[in-house]
Image (cartoon, rainbow, N blue to C red; front, side, top):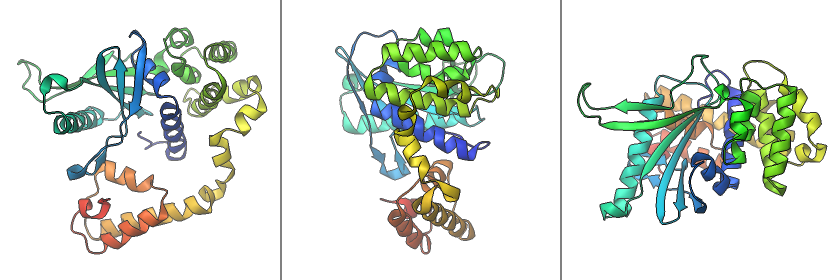
Length: 307
């Protein structure tokens, strides 16, 4: 996720979306494939492309009847110029991994990429975008991707989706207000149960925090929830330990990550965007210490971040 303008909130949103999507893979897969038949299996991939130091942890493998397919998703607070390029790179890396593992071309699952936009311009986004590698006017070569600008949807449109997962974005909808927030919460209660309901409701509160239309919807949503739903949730338990540096452990990790980036900068070692994200989001201080040691003698970032 891009968090250039909202670094603190961006991290919370990224953690929340990764958490709920990984906790309920079938519900998330159904969100990406709203008009498909019943999903029989959904599993997150966790494969590393060693040569590029990339983890394919944003790809979910979905089984729909006899068909197997891979769905790649990117969360974006708002559009950035390099989004198509990043989607292309990740899509190709997934395809390369599939080719390495499956020799028969007809057995390789199709891959689709989707970018979910949480805020941005008022002008409507198209349903799809592309990254073209072929010359204009010739047959298209490159990668096309779906665009889900949830902040441009209405609450009714989100409610109409096959999966209740989309309802967590109700506070970002164009017509989000007190009445529609109650509608969205009631709809979630009707369609989700137990732990899924709790996690999705809390995710909805987190989405209200990033509403750039400044409608104070958190104060509208919280009274609709049972206090224990919020206070006992993983996100808020984690928040209790934040303090000024998100708790002592996180503070140490942030300090080591910052030191690592400074060493890399002083040694003039290029740090790509995904490598920087990997460093800044690493909460394992022992791993960060290992990277720090390597950075003192390494000549390239791949030598530092090798697992």
